[in-house]
Length: 162
Image (cartoon, rainbow, N blue to C red; front, side):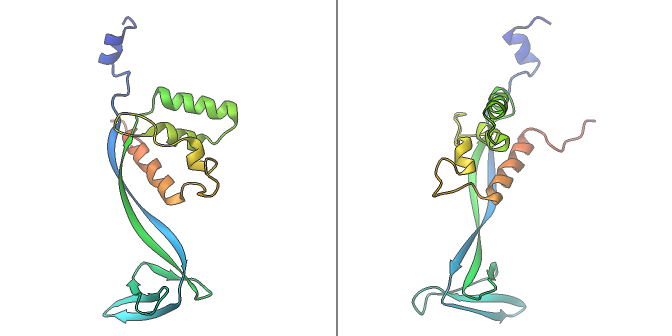
């Protein structure tokens, strides 16, 4: 085969357009509370939580009391649509750049893979590690794992050859 664009296209040597994926992750919020009590509703055990003024009481199955009893960990689920580039040139460049600059290779791979519908990067590696905005900090573990999961799906991770 001669190395031409047409022959390479026929051989599947290009990564194509980004793949649209829906992601879901749970985010933990650690918050101070004025009241935190157990209560049972049928067979379900809940925490009754009051934040601020009396009457602002809420109950959730997915709240967890801290040992001091003054804080709760609330898990909230988030859903978003993202686009994932198949591993190709952008990932190779991110790998080389992180190797040369001694930066985080996982952050580089995520930043090179997660994009918008037109294929433009959504994050920089510094957005993921928190270096871009130290006050905001690094991306949450849960979101990082979900992004890695969809990147693996798009790139065929876990598929066996027949």
